[in-house]
Image 1: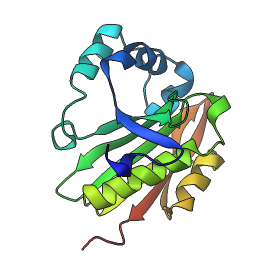
Image 2: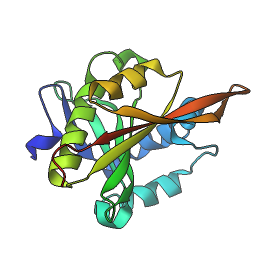
Image 3: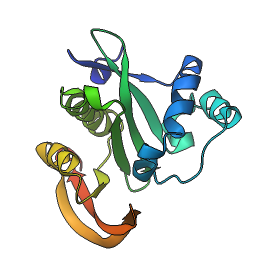
Length: 179
């Protein structure tokens, strides 16, 4: 196994066909639609098709979605994505979701984010990563800041949540190793 994609706390793995029901439940959980910018449910058929193509290389799919597993219990605790992968400009967006609130605050997100940053910079040779974060999501703002992400702009009234508009911050991390 690639040592970049695991540490003492987590293991990051590709999606598997066995993840169908879990992904189906997650993609149809309205409480996470805001984070994924989704507003419609997905059928099992569409999720199955997506999983059948999950083997595509990041250069083909323009995204990489990895399951975050607790390395001790092997339980799935979340997902982490590289999206809008742009090999020409060597950048990608990054997003993370710890699915169960009971698993939040235990270091899984931090361990996964650190592993994916390392993978993106050392293996994919990306110049930068960016994240779009609701300015009221203090936990995510703190997490990304821990790794050196810096706020570079605010999109005013960008997200409609519970009948009110929220600002969204754009955070970037420039690879100190890139040329």
